[in-house]
Length: 394
Ligand SMILES: Cc1ncc(COP(=O)(O)O)c(C=O)c1O
Image 1 (cartoon, rainbow, N blue to C red):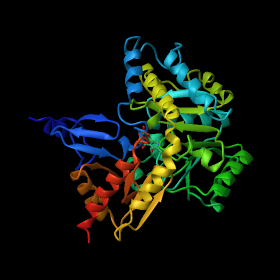
Image 2 (cartoon, rainbow, N blue to C red):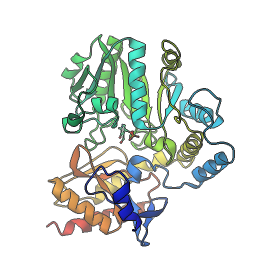
Image 3 (tube, rainbow, N blue to C red):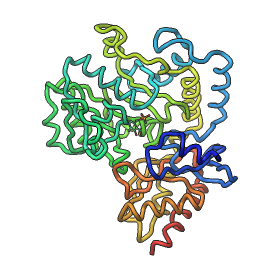
């Protein structure tokens, strides 16, 4: 039996129609399948490969760490240099109050840890999240995602959750002295790139401060330059109490983090001690890889090129079938009239050598979140393929 058939038989499936491409190599913005066909990747493993696939510095850091040690102890007990160095580098590039890093295995685990931290710090149980937000698939994260279709089959979920409309000023009144935390994506990704109103983000920050509620910003997709700033919250001029990172954080290896002031984090040491436990969170190889990717992102000045590249996508993606293009940095949603059209275009793009996808809560939108290393020529090529894939739609 070939690998594809074995995949369908023995690897648990969560969709009746997985892409099932058999990729044998990835480098930069390119991937190759088992038949030698080359693809241009414009989704970067869903906003993971911000410095491109297999960045040489990331590979070197992984190899160096392999020669030293792999897993040696559960999170937080041993001093592990890759963790320490990465925590220092991240906090050096974050506002002063975001100075203590808890490394996790995934984005969802960072969400879980942050919600627990908020309950522990405030002694409150209510949580506010937003409609059409995505925060992950574990039970706590699922409880706060803002779409009933995805939650319904898994009830009962966490109690005390309210979902407010994103960008609504009136809704902020629902945040009270009983609210432990508000969790928001800085930019709503899976909703199809919905940008926050700057004034609303300020009002949200103000309301949280006024009510003693922790503001948690989920930058799991928005972070690491995707928006045209290193952190998305810089674009809106607010500083959260907790920031959530994941995806590009590990440079292609699994890693998440929740980051807060050490006075808040310290509360995880007591009553109960070991307030959040994880065996593999902050794995030394993942931290070494992540640190190398972070340094590459900074040293190559990749964030500076984001807005120009995004503008080029917008200029080129003009077609009667394209109803709108929403963008926030190198993160674009190309809207069609229906999911069916979008799906046909995506399938044709893949057949034509371009890897793209749709959004969970905006299935009529085609996703663009390429490595930030993508060149102008590659953008021209990607847009030409999308436009060609649309021709048959007329
Ligand atoms: C904004 C956001 N938060 C959280 C998550 C969950 O991260 P993970 O899939 O690593 O659990 C995702 C994943 O897509 C995400 O986009």
